[in-house]
Amino acid sequence: MKVSGNGQGKVLTAEELQQLFEYGFTKSRDRCLFAICLFTGCRISEALSLRKTDIKNKTITFRKSTTKGKLKTRTIDTPVALTEYLAEYEPPPNEYNPHLFPSREGKALTRFMADKILKAACKRIGIEGVSTHSFRRTALTQMHNAGIPLRHIQEISGHNDLGTLQRYLLDR
Image 1 (cartoon, one colour):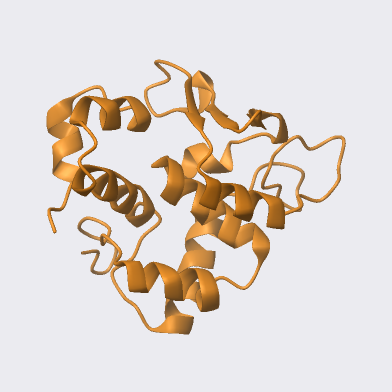
Image 2: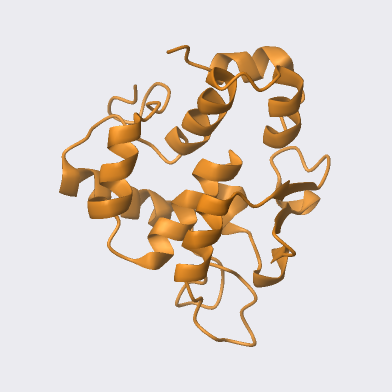
């Protein structure tokens, strides 16, 4: 668990996730952003780098240039639950800003802002130890606990090393 910014992000329970999405996040943009992280297992920076054109034909494409190692592009099928959050969120129309989550400055929303949004949501519902990376850890742990093979989780998450992936997983 994160304590004063140190340690691993907490793996969230089903109840904590429900509380966050129902009462913690107050905007459809915020629910959509963190739902993308939860349902795809992506990093917050990858979600923030998404362009409106990266979501089509029931898939989300994380471009190679926006992934951590910049090694390969990942395309993930959009789960039904995520489709609902995507449908609820309407990015502001701006032909000059292609980002799915734009900032006022005409760029993508920053990691700092995403962290600030999450901290406020957690404070609203009274949970601690959560970081933006908690959604990635939670997603990968849920996949593992559902019996999805590690190699498939590795492909979805973009991890190069199985050992690194296994450090994410929390058995329940």
